[in-house]
Image 1 (tube, helix red, strand yellow):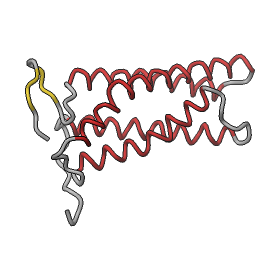
Image 2 (cartoon, rainbow, N blue to C red):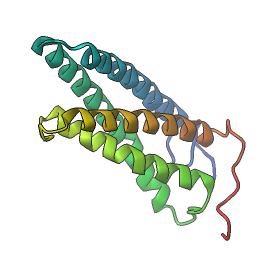
Image 3 (cartoon, rainbow, N blue to C red):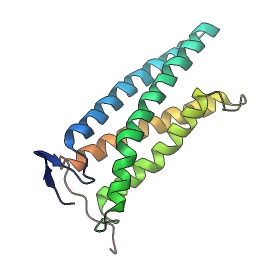
Image 4 (cartoon, rainbow, N blue to C red):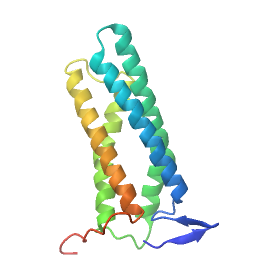
Length: 161
């Protein structure tokens, strides 16, 4: 996508300044740290108090992640795909869509858990799937961030396009 200067700040593919993208990534690293601490509490939880700490810690990670999603990621996604000259079959677009597809179930299930909406049956299975999706979406998000900044070699476009 085209880069342009906006008040002396280089803007990226969706018009999002790098400082905003870097701040969102920093928030996500903090969220990951909180998430890992919460998972540790869940793994070591032997009593009701530890499980309550596990839930509060993970709920704060969900809240922090939702702030980053609604303040930076969703607006960037809408601006990117709302652009008239977007390259739908580029590697950046593919990684963006993969990130959205993997992250959406993770954050939805995590928000359900934070509000206590998940079924009581097979709760550990749901939590394990959420943890796996959360970690995968975080890794894909880092890859996407590096790709946006041009720090990774360009991947070829999808075949046939």
